[in-house]
Structures are given as structure tokens and as C-alpha cells.
Amino acid sequence: MHLSELYQKALNLEFLSIEEGLYIYRHAPLPELMELGCALRRIHVPGNTVSWQIDRTVNYTNVCISHCLFCNFCSTLKSSKAYITSDIEYDQKIKELFEKGGNQLLLQGGMHPHATLQWYVDLFCGLKSRYPRLKLHALGPPEVYHIAKKEKLSYREVLEHLIDAGLDSFPGAGAEILSDRVRDLISPVKCNTQQWLDVMHEAHCLNLPTSATMMFGHIETDEERITHLVHIRELQSQKPEDTYGFLAFIPWPFQSKGTQLERKFDIVSHADTQEYLRMIAISRLMLPNVANIQSSWLTVGVPAGLLALYAGANDLGSVMIEENVVSAAGASHSLDIESMQDAIRKAGFISRRRNQKYEDEA
Image (tube, rainbow, N blue to C red; front, side, top):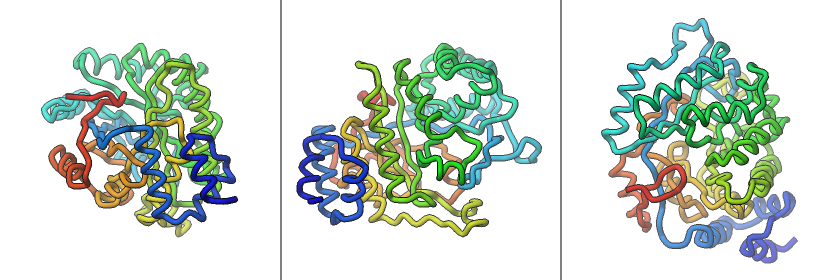
């Protein structure tokens, strides 16, 4: 293989094979790979803007049957730390969100053993009835898989009920690495690769705006990373015409502090800044049908997050008024609204606030 030929194929927005992507990932000099990622970014998102949004994460519960080896957040049902967020707490959190100019909740939590579909429907309906302009970016494929299995319903039926109750968009949570070898080791209770993809396919058919994620830097191989990207690309190519599909892809490095992977298996975060930038760039090359690549400043820090804008990323995600899950594993970075805009300007870009559909937000 010749790098120059593969570079041109990427610039032509052609699909690179797993073997081609792996070759570039392993052999391309980082400056060249970043330059190519940046060039592709300009094709997909012309101009010099970097987008971001205001939302708030609320974890509706920390009780989860999965107990993934990379998660410090989940709790058992009988633990003294177990909780379900109350209406009073929602009201306080939403009031603060509105005061800061946001209107979206990223609503996530565990796969609670007693939470029924009706419980989620009642939660969504209750929030929307009290706050009609609130947007719900909620749950993810593992939760929908869990609900469908529990209720003996199809993924589509579960999603239809949730949409009717007020679900506005659907996060790409729980993807980790789309490899059953990896998933069997680090999250064996969650949906497998095909189940994750099948839930997302139904979300696309129902025209839910979605995103996709990757958590890398633990036990996966380079080839499994590239294969993950191909899974995302292939599913995106199958979405019905004129539907949202995956609006963004967000790769972020595993945070190991205090996790079972670290404590029991001595597996620690090993993705440094150079590896992160390489991952951002190869994501841009491998995903010619996904317009937006999001930089994860929360996990890599603001300086590295801004460098990613020169490797193919065009979005900095949210100011994250509240975040508990990744922080529980060691992430400690933060940005408020003013520092987000200031960081974008100092990096040489124009700040553009957006909503979940990547539309301009005043």
C-alpha cells in the first residue's frame, strides 16, 4: 500500500477498507494525518467555525445491572449510595439549566432492574408537561435493549413509546468498542455489537437524531478500533434517505482511575495526546458520511481538545453543566460558557453555538 494513494482516496470521500484504515493509522506520520483530517473537516464543515452547546447531564439513577468493568458510577440496588432522581431535584437542575441559557437534558443512568417502559414514559411525560420547551437527549441502545427484553417488545416499539413521551434525540451511549470480544470482557451484560447496531438502525428509521461514540485505550486492538468505525459508517449508509442518522461521532479515551479494569486487571488509560489526535484524524478519514467529529475535552483536557480541531474535529460538545460518570473515573476538566467561547477564539476559530441537530442556536 502507498500512503499517498490512500490519502487521495480519503480526500475523494471514498470508503477505506479496514486494512487500508489500519495501514494509515499505523504508518502515517501524525502531522500528515492531522493535515488530512483537517482538510476533510473543511469539506464536511466549510468555514472556520467550531460548534458547541449548552446542556446538562442528569443521571436518573445510578443503579445498574451491568456493572461494566470501566464504570465507577453504578451501584447495586441495596447499596446505601443507590438513588433515583426526584422531581424536586429535576426541578432544581432544570431551573439552573434554563438560567444558564440551555434547554436540553442529557438524561442517562443505569439499567435499573425495576424500571419499566412505563416508568420511563411517565418520567419523560412528567418533565415535558412541566417544562414544554425542554429537550430530552436521553438513554441509549443498552437501555432500549434492556427495556425491550424486559417488556418483550421490539426495539422499534420501545422507541416509539419513548418518542411519544417526549424523546427528542438519542445518544450513542454504550458503544464502547463494537467488538464482541471486547464487550464480553468489559461489559458482558450489555447489548452485543449487533444489538447495539440494530437499536440504532430503528432509531434512524424513526428519524431520531443520533450520535455515535467510541471509548478506546483499554483492551481493544487497533484493528478493533478501525472495525468499530466501519460498523458506524456502514450503519450510516443504511439509514433511510432524508433522515438524521448519526449527526456526530465522539471518540474518547478510557478513564481508568479506580475502575475494576485498573484494580483487578492492572489495565490503565494508555491513550496519550498523540494517540488521541491520531484517533480523531482516522475517524474523519474512515467516516466520510458523518459530518461532525466531536472533540472530548472533558477526558483529554482543554489543550488537547483544542488541538483536535486541527486534526479533523469541528465540535467541542457541551459546556457540561453537570457530569458524573466519566468524572468518577478521573476526568476533572471543566469549561463554562465564557471559557468555551474564549478557548475557541484563542484557538483561531469562530464560536458557533448549536442545538442537538447542529442547527444554529441564539
